[in-house]
Amino acid sequence: MTNPAQIERDRAQVSQAAALAEIGRVDEAMAILAGITVRGDAPWQAVSAHADLLKKAGRLSDGAEQYRRLTVLRPQSIPTRHNLASTLGDLGQAGEAEVWCRQAMALGGDAPETWLVLARALQAQNRFDEAEQAYRQALARRPAYVDVLRDLSQLIWMRDADVAAATAVLDPVIAASPGEPALRQIKARLLEYAGQVEAAYQALTAGPLDGAGELAAAYLIQARDPHRALGHAERAATLASGPQPAIMVAQVACHLALGQSQAALKLIDVLREMEPRNQHVLACQATAWRMVDDPRYRELYDYDAFVRPYRLEAPEGWATLEVYLVDLAKALHDLHSLKTHPVGQSLRGGSQTNAPLSQSDDPAIRAFFKVIDKPIRDYMAAVGQGSDPLRARNTGDYRVKGSWSVRLRPNGFHTDHIHSEGWLSSACHIELPPAVDGDGREGWLRFGAPPILPDMAAEHYVRPQPGTLVLFPSYMWHGTQPFGGEVSRLTLAFDVVPE
Image (cartoon, rainbow, N blue to C red; front, side, top):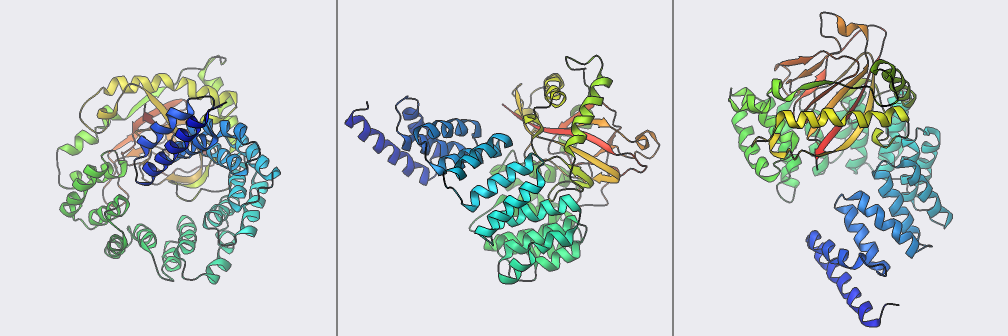
């Protein structure tokens, strides 16, 4: 039994950690709590505070471990089970997230937040009817719940490719709260990804805009009207409490679209100091350097050194790579049960899987994440270390962050984009249409075409081949050429960050 003096010391340290976390000294707070939770007799208050801070710091696996421990210390706690389910959902462990949600509900938990976590877990398992019902249960408890309205309307869009049905969920709530810009942002995003950009802008600007709304408006019309977009970005900056990288990046993009490379570079210099690993900033810096013919552009966009294809080896248990690809393709096709592309992603005319594939139990998918280890390590060894933004982060070790499959229909494509959460990005081609073998580069990977400057052409192309993994820096603009015919294009991709 813990003695009274120890109990008092623990209480004081938990209070001290909370005070430190409140003023942003999170590492110090976690160090204090870790000193308590390492003990088997740690009080539940310390375990709870430690779990919350670990999750906030992005250490989801460690946070989940502490929440699991807390479920034993507090067997009747509904919030503990909700928090564990939410963390597991963020980790891509949808099945277990569902289990803990239902445990919370069995104890009497009925919060809309728990229904949202359950809905996302069901959606990640491709149980779309049940997911939609759970989203609607959350709305029944909080009709203007923005996160639920966004997720539900986007699920309806992806299932049916019917933007009218998707926005019908939003319209009554928008009518009841016309001054709430977040609701109009959701509708605008749906319309944008349905190809109705002008209607999206009209929907977004039909009422007053806050800073987030001004920023959304800037991105929405950047390609069509960069002057007006810059005005929105500058109003967002005025409304902000201080310099915000997301707003500054929007300003940079507008300056680039207007041909104002020097104005863009001034902001980029500040952003590089603020967030040296920001992949979007690096992409914009490369674009600005290309505009002014700065030789440093070729150091960032060194295609020969940084864009590398690797032929996969057959995983253990498969006689040949070709036999393996048949099984992998079947496993991936089974996951592509949505009708159209998600909101916020680069693909147009196709579908994308829901849950992180690295968490899959399918043998063929699990084997993929074993056979990519050698190409990734070969890539890191080949590029080596150096002072540039790619090589400077090369530790020789890595972890996968995000993994998904895309199935493009004929005439589908990826818009030019970068991967903001990665260090290295990838495309592994599993099944390809015959069109890729023609003379028009149909379905090929392309690099170097910034979407904010439509006259700046791609510089480098990679012809895809089944079973070939292409690795490249996450800050490189990349997309795909549209393709014709009657056969889809199936890929598996992931991002990598240093360990």
